Amino acid sequence: NANMLAGIKPTVGRISRWGVIPITGDQDTAGPMTRTVADAAIMMGVLEGNEPDPNDPATTTCSPPPGNDYTAYLNTEGLQGARIGIPRAMYYDSVSVPGQEVYRGGLPPHARGVMDEVIQILRDQGATIVDPANIPSVLDPDPSQNLMTAGGSSVLFYGMKRDFNTWLASLGDAAPVSTLTELRDWNEENRHAGTLKYDQLRLDQSDEIDLEVDKAQYEADRARDLLLNGELGIDAAMAEHNLDALLFPGSSGAGIAARPGYPTVIVPFALTPSEFDPALPEGFEAKPRPFGVSFTGNACSEPRLIELAYAFEQATTGRIAPPGMN
Image (cartoon, rainbow, N blue to C red; front, top):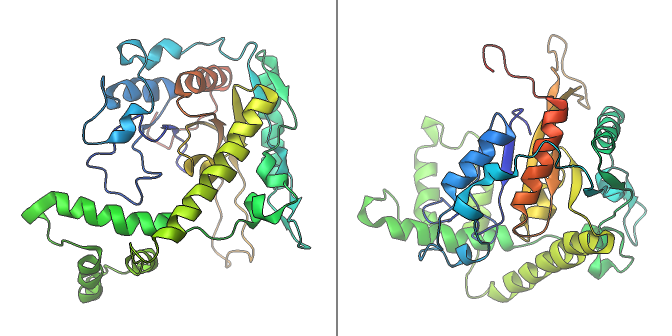
């Protein structure tokens, strides 16, 4: 989104995670970032194996398309008859948090105008717009079942302690460090060289996890993530409205899709004003920022998402290349 690129975040397991430096295997996945949806579709066919990877049990989750050919879904008429849901609550409009006198989410006026334009383009291309198609867990009045009041999750921290150490161990003697603790220590010892320019808070928090003591909390958090983001989240909205995809502004839907490991295809579309509060100091000029459109669906729905994203891209060609590039 921030770099005006087309990209596919695949279902976790669609592409082998073997060799990927992990944050957490629960959510990690490789995926293509390219100039166009067509390029991303080509890369998907290269990245996905013909058969499950014995080094990654998650690769049994989805079956590849015939011949690993995602370009077969590059259909300019792919939006005709498609049902696209608009998750208004929180992702477009601010919404009240159960039991609290606060509101969360919502789009600034310029982004709202962009998404209104996007929705009209989808209609013009033959899609049925289901508006609203809200995420049930966003609006659930029960705080224990509401995505906004679910509280913090230990999944990323626990997963990094577990999976990063496993990855380091897989490198054997070739690795300059063998544990997350050793990596933190090395960073501290070389602070003078700039290793901690941006600090290492996430590394610290992850390394402080005890994989035995904190296991029960992790399992509870992981189950809650899957429930509120998957079963009572994307899955429920898709099923209730018989949708082909949910449409998220920019990368706002990245979190809800990542937690259950669901796919998203993002298409570059526009530049929007950069706003800062407080304003930038005098002499600094905020340049417009890229703004993409994300199509998100259920697990293993990449072929359909590619079809929708490609048809939208071809109807708009909204990508603006950096100077000197195309």
